Image (cartoon, rainbow, N blue to C red):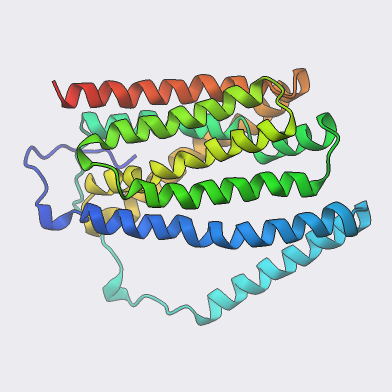
Length: 279
């Protein structure tokens, strides 16, 4: 981590991102993909659940999606403007203070990364298709419920009092914990839909959480530190697919128990920090 040296002076406010602006940016960062998924997942679920539902159809689908991704990548490489040398950021002499709040960010990142990684979409797909005996359409219907909840959550997050941001994030993780609890009990399909609607309310905390991270980072060094955080998450998640698969092999709902424990830990950490801020 670039958690290096520790200048004692506080960073000038002009170097930090305005919270309101960044929360709005991240809200739209969530909404636009979710709106796209809300429609496309239902269409793809119907096609691959009822119309093109043989293994050969699935293989052709994967080939089509792969080619589309390749074409998109080539388009971006060719047409996105390149940065000039003068626009690139130099990190020479960069010092960054890792204070108590940033340590909390690292702890919460570790807990939620493990929690999400231990219950990936393949665990849900296995549960819906192999345990409940349903089709890919029902799996995509669950994803549509997640998108719907996430879109609603971004609007509700705008109405939250800034002084209660840590409590708001804790409530978001509490709802995600409820999702993990319901799924760990081997829920029937209507409850699976309700559980994933609860899961989507993590969107209430994401704009606040991202704004919180950026408020700790100098603007001109944001790309370096956010890249470091991304690498940190990927390092933590490296072994999680094997762990999730082993747990699911023992019991299809066991990964959700593990996620539940980790989300509860993240909730308690945020509530403890909120308590310290107001005492």
